[in-house]
Image (cartoon, rainbow, N blue to C red; front, side, top):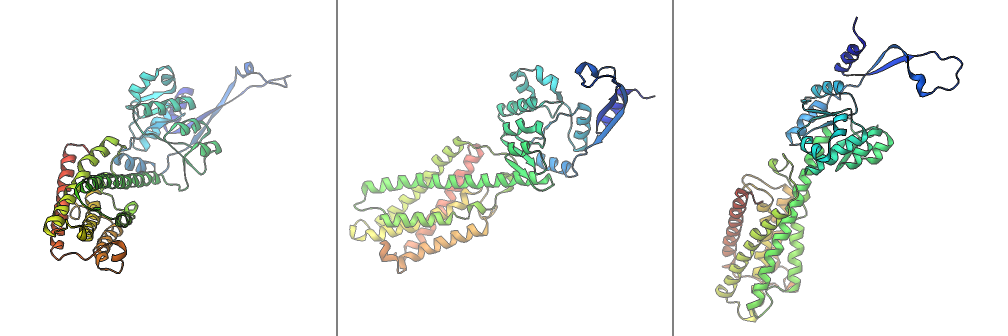
Length: 402
């Protein structure tokens, strides 16, 4: 005959949650006390099977492919937990149980929490401690739970995730509630989140480096020119068109390598990018200044409009095209192409900037027609700017500075 503990272990190893049913006859008592719970007669076990969702194994494999480490934090016993881990493709060892977590100091827990896959027999406080320890080790932690005991962990996690069938307190504690009964939604959310982050980073890099370079150009030109390098209305129009060219960035395509692993926010990388990429635009602004002053004889204030128009067109064209270099770590146009809305707005803004000096709006904006010799020089400037920026970007990437 199989022993009681052996039967319990056998059911647990098969993934069943086991509840013992025991009875005791009490006579002459209307109220039961704690001491009455002894000397019971075991009648049997009730076994409950709660198998993992069919999509769990696929979702965990997809998350791991995206560089997301999956950990199991559960109040179930270690036997059931091991079974479930194996069913979903996770290696359950090393494992920690709640009693071991209870005895550990914060330093001891922090030393092992990153290497442990399975945490079993955890109380709500234990789950919260484990999440705090992971965060203390520099990890961004998402926690998914649906029960009352999961509420503290959901609140402690960087992103708390629950489902629409969860308890009310779990849903109130969560940041996100899944409406689809498919765990693959998690992998899709991770990828989309990384795409959003990547496109935000593009915008920050573009705006900061462009403004940094323009500052040097304006300051330098104002020091030696007998007139304004660009009229205020021209600056505003230039910025408006440049901003318009960046509108599709949130919908831009993202290279696969930029979403296949976590990318933390690193302000030092942004600083290096600004300091090395920003001044490049000033170099080619100054070559344009030289061309307008010495080739097209714009020293005379009477030819200020020609100078201003030349820099207006060059500035707008370089700023619009450089988006395609900054948006990717690859070679733009050849190895990585922007989304069609971004490509279309880039071409439209450049074409509009080229048309403006010859349009009915030219007089109101203080623009004028440019000499024919300006356009081939502009093309050389564009190629030189794009090529130089690409080389500096690749150098920064090789040094792992960005």
